[in-house]
Amino acid sequence: MSLDRFRFLLCCLRFDDKATREERKKVDKLAPVRQIFEMYVENCKKNYTPSEFVTIYEMLVAFGGYCPFKQYIPSKPAKYGIKIHALCDAKSFDVCNMEIYAGTKPDGPFKADKQYNSSQAVVTRLISDISGSARNVTFDNWYTRYPLVESLLRDHKLTTVGTLRKNTREIPLEFLVTKNRPPMDSMSGFGDNLTLVSCIPKSKSKKKSVVLVSSMHHNDKIDEATGDDKKPEIITFYNSIKGGVDMVDVMVGKYSISRNSRRWPLTEFFALLNIVCVNS
Image (cartoon, rainbow, N blue to C red; front, side):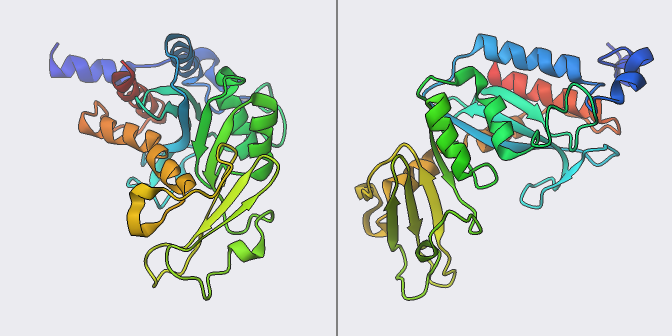
């Protein structure tokens, strides 16, 4: 295939019926890619069984053009792009389920309720295929909420480990106070099914506490492998599992087929192809 032929096909590439697109966009912001995206996700669910540990985290597909739901995430290398919530295997790094964040949904079949984009609603949809399987789910503080952790354990038989934001109202004040606490000091609290741990980082200059909640661990045991750092097992477990989605980004970056485009559906299609390579 000549370069001109390739560029011509790229310019003409579409993933839906252009004649009905404007009508569908009134109720669905993802109308240009909805069919191919959901087809791929269904194939992921049917053809792969994840291990006992899975991770939920956000991916950012770099995009600088116009997109009605483009996000700015300063912690990501690209900063601007299309955000995807992804569930992946923490051991093999295969992506098992995904969902594009498209902002506020217009009235229609894809706007089930006002809480559609809440962390609890997103996680509940992503874990629907592993519900009741006794797996462990790890995520960061954007997703972690006490009601969610309790719901996953009670209703879906899934254990959880995740970091908590400092403004979470369920955290006792003592877990946030860092004054007079030495570096690597840890404090634990226990509920009926949940364990809360607060740890001071090794660096004295930071003076910040890291707070995690777990429905998998039920003691304050220190991981002996950490030596003088004396890290609780909850923290070392979280550190060993949390990087599943980030590792997918690293693997995609080693050999990416993405090309610059001003059309966000094409950018999203390139991102899917990259994930296909990792999964296959």
